[in-house]
Image (cartoon, rainbow, N blue to C red; front, side):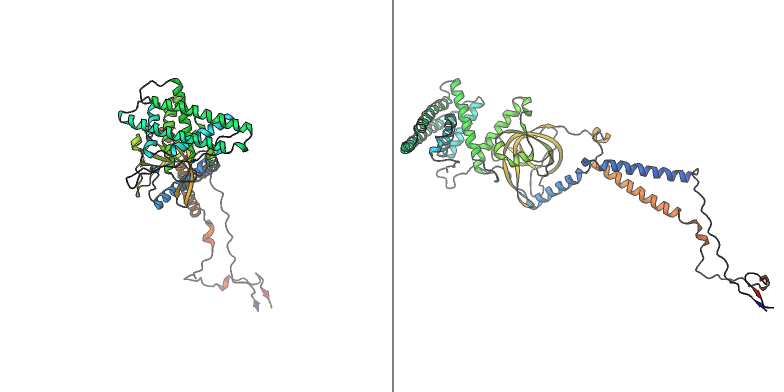
Length: 481
């Protein structure tokens, strides 16, 4: 009897080894070329990614969108200076009160005679100007402006000018009388040196007033203005400028009290930027932090700011009677790295600058990307409406003194480095090529020995079992015979 103890399951075929790639074939060489190109592209992108300037466009796009959202949500904001108060009943014109309106002993006493005299002049002229009607204050401003520009008073201004001088004389007499009475009342409490200082200040103040009154009278044209009168008028204008700047308050909107300083600022800007071409760079270079944190130190001073104009629009003017027909408002992103803007008012734009639309509810402004330098007068820390509520920003009244637009050749040649659009295109192309290559490699490099895998489907025809092919005594068979 023969006992067959062999397994009927055939041995599985051995998995063939995959041959090495044929590096001389064209397909393999093309594949290697694409891989080298992708590696070089990744290296270039890694290098450009280290440059912070290539990522600034994210912040710029965010700022532009935020600015547009703010404007769309808030609607058109009236950014024109507030008008001067006008009479409501048609009777008497209201009096605009300044920062000072009374006489105090500290106005006559300071650390030195010069400082005491300067303080007394500022307070005396503030008190006198507070008593003027609006038309009289405007006439005084126009008369001094016409003198600085070499123009004589108009014929219809002669009589009102004389009435103005008569009113100033009466107010000066009243002020000097109150000042002397104040010194007399406090005479026993003052030391002899302080008493003498008060007398010297009052005497010098009266002499200055006589010189200024004589110079103001000469503006009628009856006599030529002498050099001494020219100096008196210049000193008077400086006193009035200090009074106007004292009326300006930070952290507020544009108010009627800002009117005198507002008009004077435009005259200073015009004289600083048009008289001498080299004076355009005479302003003090400042940053956002300096203007925002130290407004009193820079108020009324000629400054120079640099940055990127991001938003601009045109607004009408309430000062058309003085030759200002409108303003171009530009929001400047300073180049000192600050994320907060600087508001700039301009009377005109340089030739070739993108035109700015009128600000309306449907058109809050035009998005800009212009590198500019603005030279102007710092006005104040201005309160304005933004998307998050009320906000503060430095306000500069000036003109664009430097602006160099990019030429198309420079942009096409890439002389300024990799632009954000080019960088985005490179990243997108590299991602697309990488995806295509990954799909291609996956489809062409799947396991080539998959034909040796067993099939899950049963064969349709099974071979016949041949008993004669079985040899006795082999493959573990035993013979019991």
